Amino acid sequence: GQQVMQIPQYQHVQEGEDFTTYCNSSTTLSNIQWYKQRPGGHPVFLIQLVKSGEVKKQKRLTFQFGEAKKNSSLHITATQTTDVGTYFCARTTDKFIFGTGTRLQVFP
Amino acid sequence: NAGVTQTPKFRILKIGQSMTLQCTQDMNHNYMYWYRQDPGMGLKLIYYSVGAGITDKGEVPNGYNVSRSTTEDFPLRLELAAPSQTSVYFCASRKQGVGNTIYFGEGSWLTVV
Image (tube, rainbow over all chains, first blue to last red; front, side):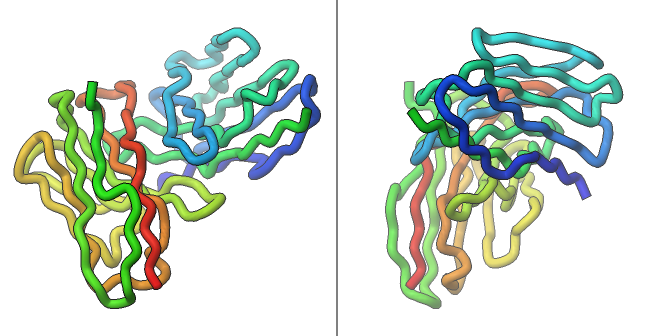
């Protein structure tokens, strides 16, 4: 199947600690997108990665696309309580399948 | 800026009842999607459509039906509701083409009792 797995499923961190979620696809991806869903909300687009080995930054967030274009990661430096939510990667074929998600909880 | 609009926002159904979740978008997007999200879980694709008159199954289509008679509307029909269909349902849309962002509605909270 066209599975996209993410680990970990949950992560609890103290405010100020770093956080990383990993996304792994069973097939090669043409590109990958990342979304954030706040509690009670809907997923919102964060970024898209296209090139093999690509690294993009958004303030404290760093996104990487693997050399083989089968995996990706999102790293948050010095987490804040506003980072709370679930982070999803997504393979952007016609079906648009989302990864299993990583729920981040940040304790002040 | 309406974007993707879903109705109703909340609904309680009895086992065996049927209902339709409405979804409309005003962005002239070709592609539309229905996802369900169980509490604390990820997004599972139910059905999707690449244009008016074309629909296809996603990961979890059983117990649901869809139609796409216009570009704007993509209703999701639940027949013979079951407790396992208790979930949050999200409608979404995007432009045709690899890499285009998907936009979500606010969600419809459905409880089957």
